[in-house]
View 1 (spheres, rainbow, N blue to C red):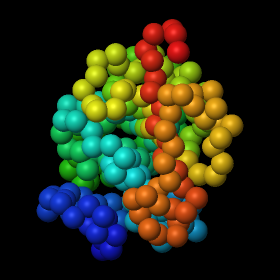
View 2: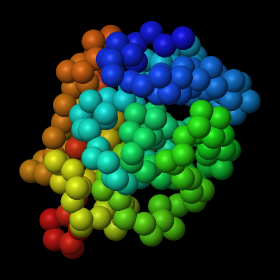
View 3: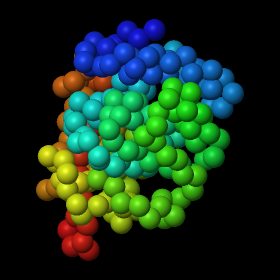
Length: 213
């Protein structure tokens, strides 16, 4: 049963509430078979994983028609919660580990998401263009940008220029230094008050689509 999501997002439709509620039962069921979330942490699914993913929805309201790539989606976080939050946007989830992608695609199907697609493989194999790439603690920012720069569209439709949005924790000064002039870092405690978020941050980096920075 949802305890936090509807508090922070009071305008959710009945369908969205049902989808988030279903995630709270489906993820533990799948996790017992295929480990996509630490088994020690599965009891904290709503706050530590789904609500954490939805910090991106507090940071930016994606314009209808936006295309978002979830790079290294694992079991579908943050992509699946974001797809439920933004039904008028398209989300493409990619991961190299097939069994984790199976969990993500099965949950998406079971909760009735029609705005998600999945790709098993490496980012180098993905040729599509997106408004934003999102990622949850997959790799350091410079490496991530080098891999996905080719996937950032030059066409703009959101109030923020196209780029990369990540969910991270800890001290990010050295990691962000190379892109400091084109980046923003915000504490997630700006959006959510739970203790878990005290060390959690969201980063945004504008990614230029030319070879120049």
